[in-house]
Amino acid sequence: SSDFIIGFPGETEADFAATMKLIEDIGFDTSFSFIYSARPGTPAAELPDDTDEEIKKQRLKVLQERVATHARQISRRMVGGTQTILVTGVSKKDPGQLQGRTENNRAVNFSAPDRALIGQFITVEIVEALPNSLRGVLHSG
Image 1 (tube, rainbow, N blue to C red):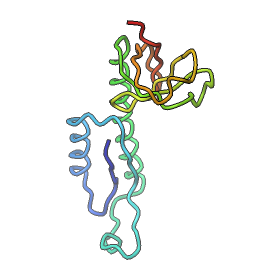
Image 2 (cartoon, rainbow, N blue to C red):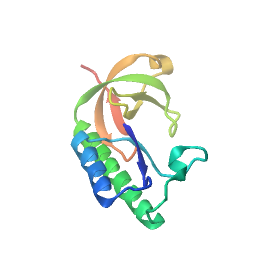
Image 3 (spheres, helix red, strand yellow):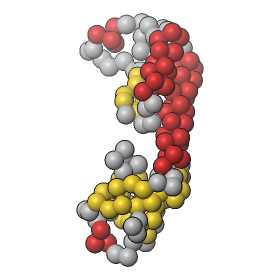
Image 4 (tube, one colour):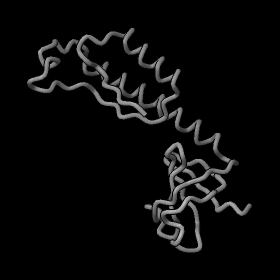
């Protein structure tokens, strides 16, 4: 994960292209990305804001879509494999399931016989990649 500020004063198309190349080279699959806004009292607040607002919005959209594409690709590659997860609690969307986190911070929802697994590391098989999480089943072997 990384933070990206889009449209900082003076940002050129070449600067944005370099940011996108970095995202591609590293393969970021999560980010905290925002359009630049001046903060009073900072040196940057004195710089001319010379990038059109629509260009900033478009660049942010492109960046966020690319990061989301990386996330989907990584999640899809996990399907069919096993993952060790830390069981963190009850699933937010289905109280009959538990949720855990993989080593690469993917949320995994799975059915479990009881809540005694919360706080433990377990192995699950990943059976489905969803837009914002994975579905797993308890690994039996």
